Length: 124
Image 1 (cartoon, one colour):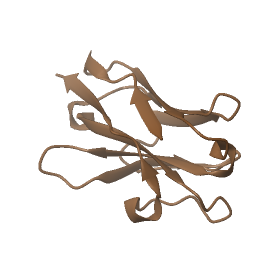
Image 2 (cartoon, one colour):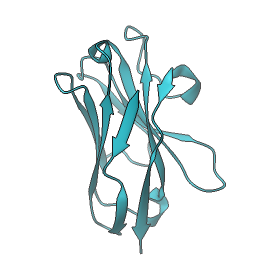
Image 3 (tube, helix red, strand yellow):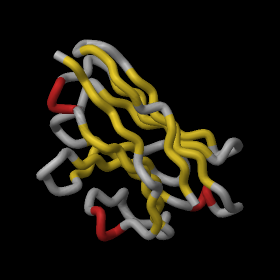
Image 4 (cartoon, one colour):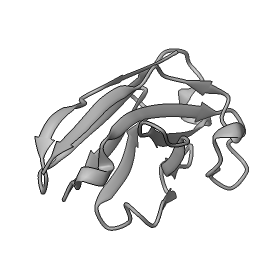
C-alpha cells in the first residue's frame, strides 16, 4: 500500500515536496516511480528511482527542476519539486515495481501497485 502526501496549492516558481509512504517489508527491493495526470490528459511519467536509490530518471519536462529520493529505512520515497509552473498542475501518483533488476521503468504499465494520488495546483 502506498500513501502520498504533501500536495497543495503553491504559486508559480515555488516548491513542494511530495512523500509516498509504503507498507510492507519489500520496499527496499522495489523500483519506485512518480506519475501525474492533469484533467483531460493521460497519466504521464515524471520520474523513477532504482531500488537502491543510486539511479533516477526524469521526464524531460521536469529535468533540472524535480528530484526523486528515497529512504529505505523509512519505506518512503520523495519528490522534490522546484521552480513549479502552471503546467505542473495535476494529481501526482506514486507507484511501485517489483522487478528491481531491470532498468527503471518509465511506463505506467510496468508498475505493479499505486497510491491514491495527491493534488498539486500551481497558481500563476
